[in-house]
Each structure stands twice: as structure tokens, then as C-alpha cells.
Image 1 (cartoon, rainbow, N blue to C red):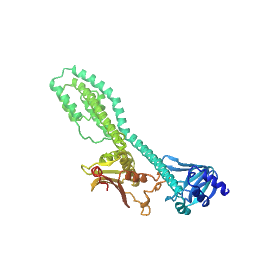
Image 2 (cartoon, helix red, strand yellow):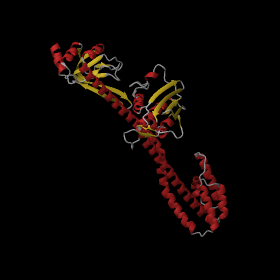
Image 3 (tube, rainbow, N blue to C red):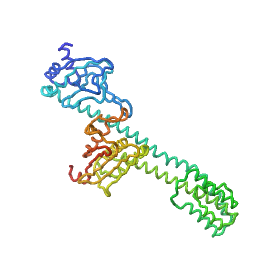
Image 4 (cartoon, rainbow, N blue to C red):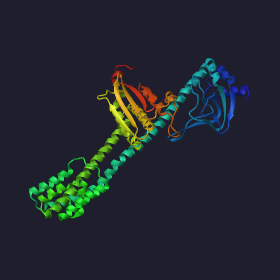
Length: 471
């Protein structure tokens, strides 16, 4: 390509066409043109970025592997600029930059960029703005990706947590209608038997003993079968149908209570009394199970609502750090159980509120706790604490995993740096944590050795921020 043609193409380039002619002439004199065929790599993930690339024609993209699969995060066409920008510290891209079609580029090598900064002020200003736009695009793209991953984990954890109470609701509701009908029929029959007040009192005493709250050991199916068989033997001995044996075993009636009832009522009324006790007690216990299951569902939904802060405005507000940590632990409880990891939370009583974005702050806890669960082995432990230190609320997330090697501990907050296998981590979780901490005027530190890794997050107390003290 002749020098005149190159100057014309650079002068017509969308990104730099407004700069002075003198600066375009400098660029034309300090670079070279080259072409890429379809599929050819401009800059590999391993680097290095050799310089500033002005895309004259064609189409280039960068795709990264993440928990949601391979995804395009940036693209460049004729009229765009990529590669090394003025004042940029980039060494390598997060993934290969690949030509999707035949492309032509003009490249200024990175060793010439300091001179370009001195000689081409307007061009430098344009490129710096492009660099900031690119950084914002990368950050917003991966923040959204990380949020979607967190949402997926949240949905999976919530589905797991809701499974047991929802199954209990369905099971108990299905039996309740039958038990209510049985109790109603037995009550009418018992009322028609014209029992004395003493006999009715004895029947009610046995029924109340079955409903009384008490700690019962969990019995195996074999133990429950033995219990049912013992009651059936008692019923036969007293001339009562064994049809109610299963129901009586379920409600926890004792043989002693049955003996007392047999002494208080005649043989004819005994079966009616036992039918009513079994049906009524069973219906009441099913109602209690439904109430407990519904309460568990309500608590889970409340925890998720508290974690997501979906009803909060997007402005800094007073944040209850203890509640946020507690909600996050509930949300991640299923993952902890699956991994056999115990999680403890100790918050200082009457902990003051912080001032910040509640959703951001809960995302910090979610990422740190999730990483800690990944770091520990089976039967490991994650310890959370929140205390007041000076003008800060200090939260510590401590795990007893193998620790972070000394040679990489200073890089864990770098974008795209990850120690997880391909497709298991984007390398942005801790970078996002760092950004969210900074957005909330906080600080984050890490100390690690084998058997103990501690992340320490400091968020200013609301009173300190309101008073104008931002330390």
C-alpha cells in the first residue's frame, strides 16, 4: 500500500478521522499494515499485546469460557481500534482475539506509544476515551455474567431448599381431607354413645397427650413397624379392630395411655374412642406439619428477598450487615450441605448499620462465601464474623482449606485470573468483589496459609459516613 493511500485510509477511519493531519502523518510513519485470514489469531490469550491495532477492514472477536459457556464479549470491525492503548497496562487479553473474516489492520508497536503520547495529544485523548469505554464494556458484561451465574446458583439452591417443605405441604394436604372426614364420622358416633363426663375427660386426656409437643427420637421403618405391631397386639387383646393400629402408632400414643383409657370406658365405647383419637390427632398433626412447612417456605422466600434486596432503591441506604450475612448463608445452605461443610456465623450484638448498596454488599458476601465453600474439603468449616472496629464494620470470611499459594495471592483480585478449571470460573468473581467493595467506600484484604484463608472486608458505618468521615 502506498504512503498516500495509507494516509487517505487513516484519514477516513471513523475512530481517528477528526485528529489533526500532522498526527495522522505521524501514525502513518510509525506503523505497518498486515492482513489476517479467517480464523487467524491476532493476539493469543498468552499474549503479549504487541501494540495499537487500527482495524481498516474485516471483523475480529474475542470469546471467553465461563460457567455459562463460551460467550462473545467484544468485537471490532473496520473503523474500530483495539490492542494496546496509551497508558494501558494490558499484557495479554482474556482470550484469543480471532479474525472472523479476512481482515486488514494497521499496527503501531507498543515501544512507539510513548512517543505517540508526546507527539499526538488529540489522538491520545481519543484513544484514552476508547480504552475507558472498552473497560466499561468488559466490566458491565462480566458483572452481568457473574450476576447471572449467581442467580443460577441462587435458583438451584432455592429449589433444593424448597423441595422438602413443598413436598411436606403436598403430602400433608393430601392426607388431611381424609383424616378430617374420619374424625368427623368418629366424633358423631362417639357423641351418640352417651358417654359420661368422666369417660369423655379420659378420652380427651389421651388425645391431648398425643398432641403435646415433645422431642421424639427418629425411628427407623423397622422400629415403627415394631411399635405398630405392639399396638395391634394390645387392640386385639381388648377386642378392638386393628385397623387403627397404624394411625395410633403415627400419633405416638403409648401403651400406658391405652391402658388408662381402657379402664375409663366400657369395651363397646373403646373402639369409638380410639377411632376418634386416631383421626382427630392425625388431622391436627397434619395441620401442624402444613403450618411448619409453610413457615419454612415463607422464611426461605424472605431470606432470598433480603439477599437480593429487590425492593431497595438504587441509592446508598442503611444496611444491616448481620441480616445480609444470615440471608446469604440461608441461600447457600444447600451447597454447604452437599459438600459436607459446616458454616458458622457470629455477629456482634447490636452491630451498627453500614451505609451502602445492600444488593452490592450481599453480592460481596455471596462471592466470598461461595469461594470459601469451593476451597474447603469434605467436613471443612467456613467461619463468618462481623464486628465493629473503629469507624468500620469488619466482616471476616475464614476457611480451613489448603490456602492460596504465596506466588499468586497478590494476583487473585486481577481481572480474568482464576485457579479454577476451564468453564468453572471466569476469574472475575474476586475482581467484582473488589469493585463492589470500592463502590461502597470499603476495603478488602486477604491473608492465607495452609489451613486458614481469611478475607477481611471493611465497610464504613452509616454514622461515620453521614458525619462526613470517610476513612
